[in-house]
Length: 72
Image (cartoon, rainbow, N blue to C red; front, side, top):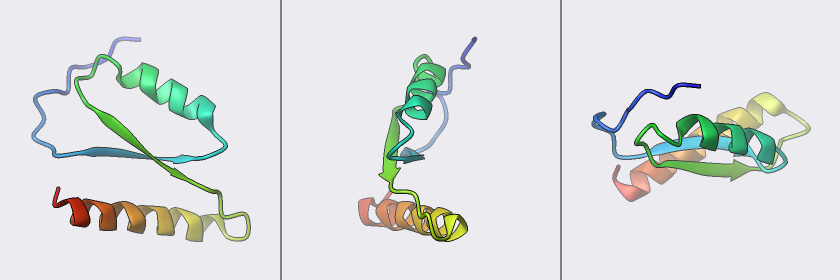
């Protein structure tokens, strides 16, 4: 798979939300982005078995808070 060089993008951080149980997806993403020039940080979360939509919302909110805390 050919990866586009994204190192010229003017971004401060790249977070990728990932379920703790899905190491396979993190492996795939690392492979996909290895030559992109981006430093991808995984934000690991537990699956909300009771309400997956809530889990998704909470994960995105947590990433937003993290970005604000880091001032990125």
